[in-house]
Length: 337
Image (tube, rainbow, N blue to C red; front, top):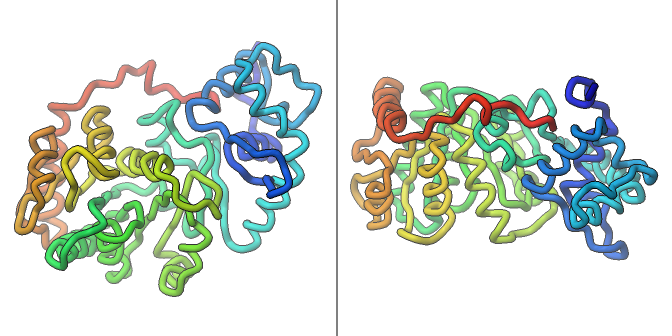
């Protein structure tokens, strides 16, 4: 009988997942660490379950990895030696107010488990209230970095309205559309979540940002090492996590055919994670029309109160329900880890 699916997970299980799926514990003098991404860890999770093993077994040198894919096995062999350094670094970050989250933790967003399945991030690091990641309702506000003051006002007003309506505002935390949307909610003393591409420690330490975190209004999180800098692939991955976390997504501005906003929105339209609302009012760029043509739901009046926002999202959800693929129950089932 396979017990690995039903046994409670231990701290060693968490440590092993973090060691496998992050660069924690690596130093300049150590061998380069190539962490497993979501798909790689999902394959390892299935292998562990089929062999009646838990992640903690990866901490043991004697664990036989010969039946695992050779590439994956090679990337796991350094875990026993690296584990003490990983644990020490995690402890140091914890003392500075940062947390870690793995896929089997109770606080992990259920929407990622169900919507992303094997592509759900295996490890997240963050600061601020964990509960915001599972809060419903939630609304993402995303868009281009380079926007004028008129579009900044659109993003900020929608963020403020969403906050007052009881939504947690989610964005990528980037300059421009994302940050203005978050700012609207925070200025109204309403909660917000930033899903970052990296630079968690740097961004969480900034003056106003630190204050919002300390006041339990802001959560920042990332799927890479808390000190990792910008990498294009990481930024693209986090766009997927934004769309898959929320009840609905608002696009303030996009460039047709390129950029993180466009690619994240296309992935959302393809997979049907959340209704996609696209600003088509004053100063909307040409890329927004292209996104509507691809299946986004257009709107041109800024919702000014909870009733108007609710009606807008309800209309988008009706449109979304007609377009979205039906996910079979077998696919909705949780991964073992």
